[in-house]
Amino acid sequence: MIEWNCMAEPITVTERAANRINEIVAAEDHPKALRVSVSGGGCSGFQYEFALDDTKQDDDIEVVRNGATVRVDSTSILYMIGSEIDYVDDLIGATFKINNPQATSSCGCGTSFSI
View 1 (cartoon, rainbow, N blue to C red):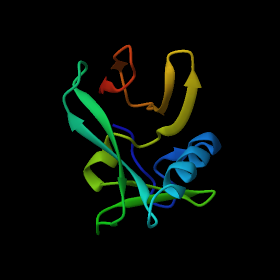
View 2: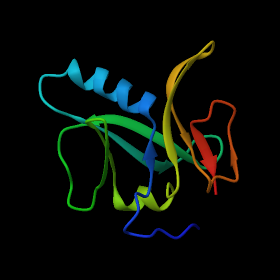
View 3: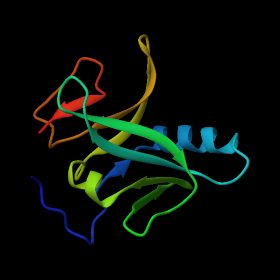
View 4: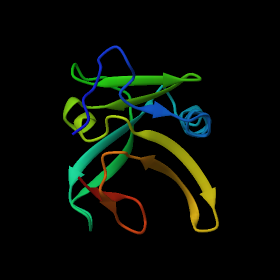
C-alpha cells in the first residue's frame, strides 16, 4: 500500500470533476459535497460509491478544488491514496472516474478494482 504524507493531499480532483460537482451541488437546496467511499463488492473485489453528502464526519478527509468539496472517510482513503478523481463525458456515457495507482486490476466499466 502507498504511504500518505499527512502534509500532502491524499487525493486530487481535476478541474473537470470540480466543475461537474459544482453543477450538481448548485441544483441542491443547501450546500453539499461529493462523498466517495470504497466498499467490498463489484466484479474486481472493491467498488467506488458516490453520493451527495451534507454532513462532515470527524474522520473525513476533505479535498476542495474550485469551491467543490470531496469527502472520503478514513477507511476508504487508505484504498485511494494517490488517486485522481476526474469527470469524463465520452461515447459510453458521463461519469466520475477514479485513476487509482494502487489498483492492480479493474473491471471494464471502471467502477470496481482490486489491490
